[in-house]
Image (cartoon, rainbow, N blue to C red; front, side, top):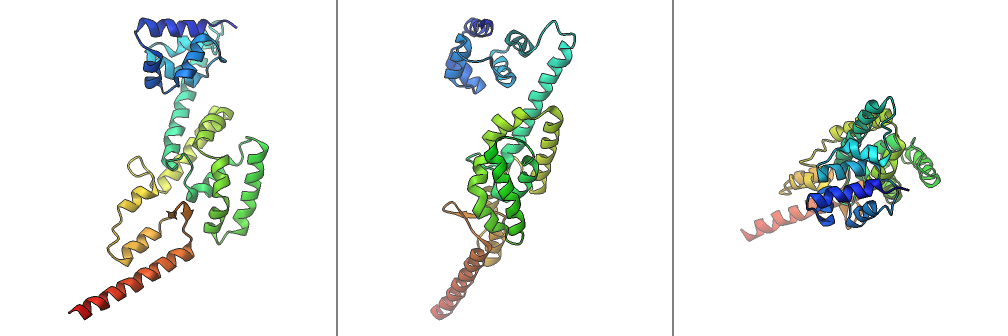
Amino acid sequence: MSNELGIWIKHVRDSKGLTLTDVSKISGISIAQLSRIETGKRNVPKPDTLKKISSALDISFNELMIIAGHIDVNDDDVLIKIDDHDSNLYLNEKIKQVARLLVDENGNFLSFLHKELYTIFSSIEINDETRAFYELYKKGLVEYENDPDTLIELTQDTFNLVCNFAILKDVILEKLNFEQKESILNELTKISKRHNLSKSSNSIEDAAKKISLNDTKDLEKFLNQPEIKFNGKLITNELKQRILGYAEALIDQEKKDLKNDF
């Protein structure tokens, strides 16, 4: 296979006085991957990778697409296909942007969103293991209809394995057409708005910081959030009530001690 693409990228990089490290920092693509692209030791890069390279080197994305063979200049619909590629890449980035609001620092979707995410992703064919898990999860929704905390506790580890940000980015988006991506973006945006998850406050931890713990009312407000963890484990509703009970008892005791002091 000809390495015209890799030779051209290296030529442009050298002419601009950029090292592989420079391009890696700008594009977010690893040095090793860039090196393999330039030397032709890997398959033709995907359009989203070429988009990052074109931005880093300040060259035409469409030109790279043509050299890579993603677009045939002799095709009568070449301009339409270029526009389609641009639209798809834009949509991919928008989906990833919204999805980042719904995940924790490890790239796992917040567990109180799992039920809603299941309705979105369960119809997408990925592999047999994922399909089997979604079937079990569907049964769990019925069995634990009145006990969602237990369902989360039982399924969150496996859910995080079969559906997370990396899988959305690297697997799911590769399987969807433009219309399906538009639908996914619409549904993820609805979830984000429904739970008031925004760039400024996209985690339970951020929300918790806004709540003062001066009295049991504030503590109750904190514990009523949809997902609270301690040492990595979800705090169940039963445990939340016990925590409130202990807090009230401690406050009562503190009031009695203060009276005795006077």
